[in-house]
Image 1 (cartoon, rainbow, N blue to C red):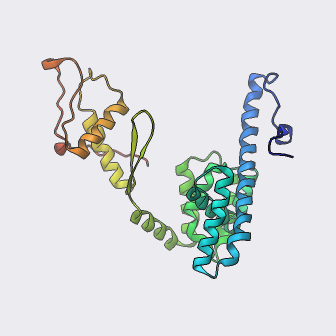
Image 2 (cartoon, one colour):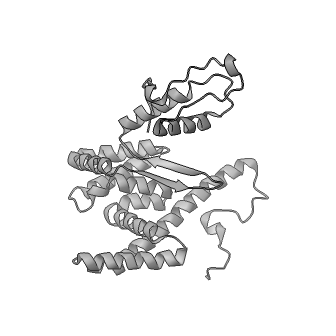
Length: 275
């Protein structure tokens, strides 16, 4: 079949048109589409794994040659699919780990038990398992857990991966957390309409403290402040980082009853925050 040919949706359990599907049937279409998407992700990652095996693995004994082969393979795929080479290099690593270390988990993706978006988390939490004697046990236990339990939030998926890996190698979990802590950073990216996003990675405890301080400053305005919660919190972050005053933006003048502290004087009431 050529690339431009219309796909046969029936083989994926999907109708060609939704015109004759009633409201109750639309839910079934959503479920079928999710499973089809997982299957397509499986095929994409399986093909990338095969690229790795054919073009990169033969040079594993030479650090420089394996690096060159990895970059060349990623570059070829990136040009074909219109993505950055860096993102493809990362996904090549995901594919190799998934199919070489976690074949039973890969089958869960094939069967629609998990979605493609879950793969990144699973690979990240099991990255140190590859090449270990206990890797097949982690693979089988994780696949069993994925098939046994219901929907997967990001936190639940992290927890089950960590629990299974810790059962076989507590050091691996500690080493991964140490590496994550050492990789903490701050970065910014431009978006649209003159806006940008500021990111910072840090320990969960530091995030808890930082968010509590942001919320304490953002909530110090009066009820007449016209900003939405998100906008006030954004302004509070800037005030805390820059040292500039954070002010209530109501139009009450001297009748404003807000007590806004200077950023350096903000006392946060620590609350439990899930990250």
